[in-house]
Length: 292
Picture 1: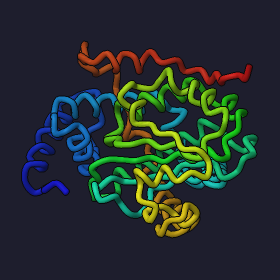
Picture 2: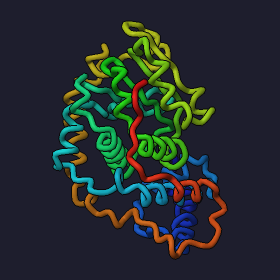
Picture 3: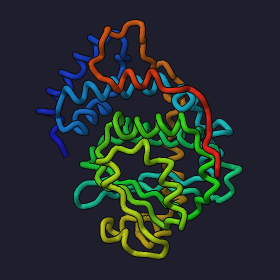
Picture 4: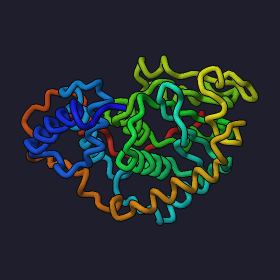
C-alpha cells in the first residue's frame, strides 16, 4: 500500500491546488478519490488531471445515470432484487480487488438497463470514496449464465457508450483481468454489442469461460469467491446485503447532484483533450438495440 504520509500526499497537494484553479470543475472532492486518480494514472499528475476532468464531464453530461440516485427509490430497489453486483471481501496475493456481476433473475421484463448502470456506479462510488485501502488493480467477473439473447433488446446505446467511455477512460481504477463465465452459445452476438466501444488494450484482458468449466481458477483463486462458486468468501446474499447497507448509508451524499456538476460556461477555451469534446457531443437519445 502506498505511503500516503509522504510522496502521495505531496502529489495530492499538487492535484488539489490544480483543481481549485479550474473554474469549471467541482472543488469539494474527497481526498481518497483524488488519491485513486494519482495511483490509477501511474503517478502521472498530467494524466490524473485529464482523467479528473473527463470523470466530471461525463458525469455532468449524463444525468440519466448520475442524478436521482436515491437508494430507496423503486427503480434502484428493483435493480438490487434482480442483479447481484458486489465487490468481494478479499484481494488476491497481487493486491487485486475482485468483483462479481450477474443477473439473478432471467425475467428480463424486470430489468432496466439504465437503472442497472446507475446502480452499478452507485456501488462503485460507495467503494471509491469509502474504502481507504488502495488495490493494485481490479478483476471484474461477469456471470452470463442467466443472460438470454433478449438482453440485446434491453441495451440503451447512449447509456452503453457513456458506460464504456467512463469505465475505460475516467474511473480511477486499473483493470488487470476481465472474466466472463458461464458463456452461452450466442456469446458472439452479445459481445458484438459491446465491441465497437471497447479499447483494444481492454479487449486483450477479456477471458471467456465455458459453463461448468474450472478455467477461471487458473487466474482467480477459488477460495476468494463466494460459496455459490465453491469459494470461502461467504454467500452472495451476505456480501450483497453488506454493500446495499453501505449504499443506503450514503443516501444524502447520493442525492446531492451538485457535487458532480461541471460549469461549461467557465471552462477554459481549449481543454486539450479530444475526449472532453466527444463527451459533450454524445447523443442523449434513449435508443435501444433491436433483435434481427
